[in-house]
Amino acid sequence: MIEHRDHHCVFAGCDAPSHWCDVHHLIHWAHGGETEPDNLALLCERHHTKVHHGFRIERQPDGRWRTYRPDDTEILVLPRIPDETVRTRAG
Ligand SMILES: [Zn+2]
Image 1 (cartoon, rainbow, N blue to C red):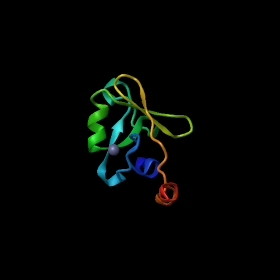
Image 2: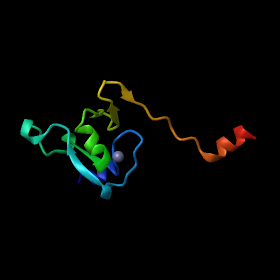
Image 3: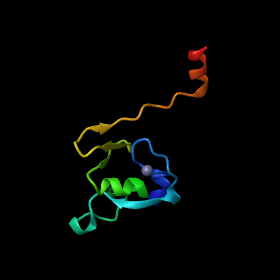
């Protein structure tokens, strides 16, 4: 089950849980894509719409996902800074 691999929306920066997500075919079955885990990705409704409007997600051999804008630049998400660190810096 794809839900057990991806756990949540694979779009950069999104952690919508799997029960909010649709299974997206990276290569549409009409274009020869197969219903196999390598061709499937979990995407929430919002991001599912985006990848059908020019955005692109790509799975790396190590299982991590990359997200690209319609102009082919990658969407990079910085790791979240824990609240504690922010407070220390502010103090
Ligand atoms: Zn999402």
